[in-house]
Structures are given as structure tokens and as C-alpha cells.
Length: 273
Length: 168
Image 1 (tube, rainbow over the protein chains, first blue to last red):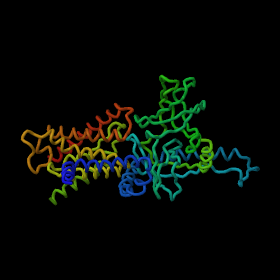
Image 2: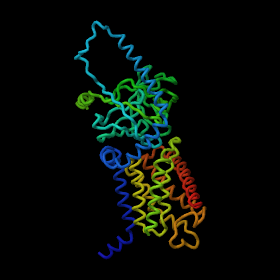
Image 3: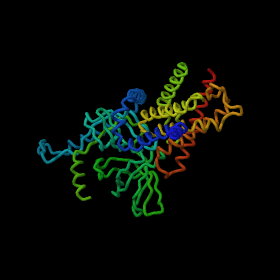
Image 4: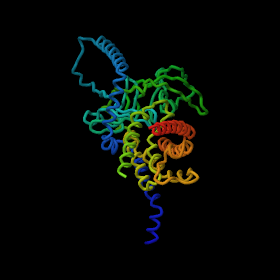
């Protein structure tokens, strides 16, 4: 007993160190995957006030850019509406269409906390479960991919940014439809890497890259960026560098897109796994 | 006693605020992210009991984690920095030992001593932090570049702040 006490007294620093480091590693190991459990719901509430103040200042300073972007979106939407209304024959237009089912639901939110300089970047938006946001919804900024929701509290949600080493996205080259996998390599916050495109496909600098819709999270045809560089690597595939359309340093207003038929699709796919 | 608690409490708050409001917002490519809040661990008195040092460094890391939404990363890195601090102090100790009741500051022990002391602890902290952040050994050398660049800027900022403190 005495020698045990001596041992404890001699190594008490090491013991405290190991206990605290154990707590930290435990947080590290569990916190990143279950992002919504502890950090989003509970403790982050304390820091949220400061984050909102920082964000208010930052938004105010870039109001001009935001206005420009919104005006551009407005024009695009008006043009779209024009073409849609023209297309339909007013005589046979039926507004109680029972066959059509809405697949995607849109809502807009403001980014209140954002990071681009880490290796695993997340951002927080100001809408949560009470506003209908759920885990695995797509986050889109000005019609280009920004991230996906990984955790919700009542009034806030945390989204995994495209600039995250764990983010994977199924995308295709718009001109020929070949699909591959997009990921971020942690180097530059304007560029991502597209892999799994075989070398017999013709790729040009400037080709548009868009989502495929295979993931049941992102709708089909949302732009990701353009090809800025490609090289042939040792294997059978290209290594294509994509210039991202979204500038993550200027992320302010985003659209959240939920897939209403996602459960149906994943249930069906589960049967064949 | 009360006086020094107040003083270090103020330093604690000021360093966290400057980290969150200023240094974390330097978005100059992904390579340069100075974490100046480590300075708190550097400044604690030399004769502080080591259990208190460990708990304080864990606390400042945990608070940084709350702000950056990265559970455990900062806490484990700064806890490690607090753990190695007594050993670093022993390595860099001046020839006639430390003066009783003194702070490890530039005023007392000179720029050269303070620079080496800061460099060792910042390097330990940043190495742990950046490798924990990536959590894989692919791109080993790129992470090392990030560690070195960020450490350089952290050390520069800490020494600038220390000069300012001396001027007062």
C-alpha cells in the first residue's frame, strides 16, 4: 500500500496528464463523427454569441458583394420563369397535377461561422431542426456545391464543407457524362481533385463539372467548377484539378436542398446490398 | 496571490479573444494558421505546481475547441505543451538557475533565452495539433511544412507581444 502511494505521489503529473489526454482523445475520436451529439447541441451554445457578433461585422463589410450576387440570382430566376411560362400551353395547363410529386425542397440560410484554413472544415448555418433542416441535406451556394449537413440542433446546423478531407462527391463531366469522384486534397481552398476518370476520355481545360445525383443528397446537375488542369498518372486514370465555382471565403447565404424521396431510394437500395 | 490570479485571468481572456477575433481569421492559404494562445502556457510562473499547469493548459485548449468546433484537438495539443514545459525549462535553464518567484519572461531572462524556450514549446504544440487535425500520415511532409510555417508566425507574434509587454 505504501509503495503504491509512493508510486502515485511520484508519478502524479504523468497520471494527471494521461487522464486528461485520455479525455481529449476520447472527445477527438467521438466528437468528429457524432458532430451533433455534444458540440452542436450543448457546449457550442456558449460561444455562439461571439460567433454571431463576428459574423454580423463580416456580413456588413461585404454587403456590396452580397447585393451583387443576389441581383444576379434574381435576374437568372426571372429569365427561367419567363421561359417556363412561355413553354406551357395556356389552354391545356392543369394546375392540379396529381402525378407530379415534388422531389426537392429548398430553403435558404445564412452562414454564421465558417473556416477554410483547416484540413477538416465545417461551417454553421442559422437554421436547424425546427426550421426543417435535417442531417444529409445538401448545401448549395449560388447554384454550386458548398457542403452537406452533418448535425442539427434546434435552431442551428453544422455542415461539412466541400473543403474537408472526408468529403466525397459523385460528379461528372458535363460534356460527355463520364462520372468520377471529387475530393479535396487540403492544399488550396479554390481547388479540388477529380479522380476515377479513365484516360480514354477526352478532357479539356474549361470543361464544366457537375453533380450526378447518384448520392441521393445532391440533385443532378449542380455545378461544382471547371477543369483547370489535368495530368496522366501512372494508373489508368487522370488526375484532374478542378477550379471550384464557390469561393468558400465569401460564403454568406446558402440554399439548403432536401430530397423528399431519399428514404424511399435508400430503403430500396438497401435491399440489394 | 489574488493579484496574480487576476493578472493571469486577464491574460487568459485577452489571449483567447485575440486568437478568436484576430489570429483565427488570418486566412492566408491553408499553410499559415498561427495559434498565439499557446503564449498563456509560456507565461505561467516558473514555480507553478505541475498539476495546476496541466489543468490550466487543458482548460485553454478546451475553450479553443469550443470556439473552433474541433472537439479534443486543441485540448490534447496544449495539454502536451503544458506537460513538456517543465522539461523544456530544465533544458534551457540559465547557468545560475532560475530566480525565485519569477515569470519566464523576456525582461528577466533575455531575448535569446525566451526565443529558444518559445520555439521548443510552440513546435511541440503545433506538431501535435496539425498532425491530430489531419489524423493520417499521407502528405507527411506537407503537414510538416504547415507546422513549420505556422510555428514561425506564432513565434513572431508571441515575441512581438512580449516586446510590447516589456515596453509597458
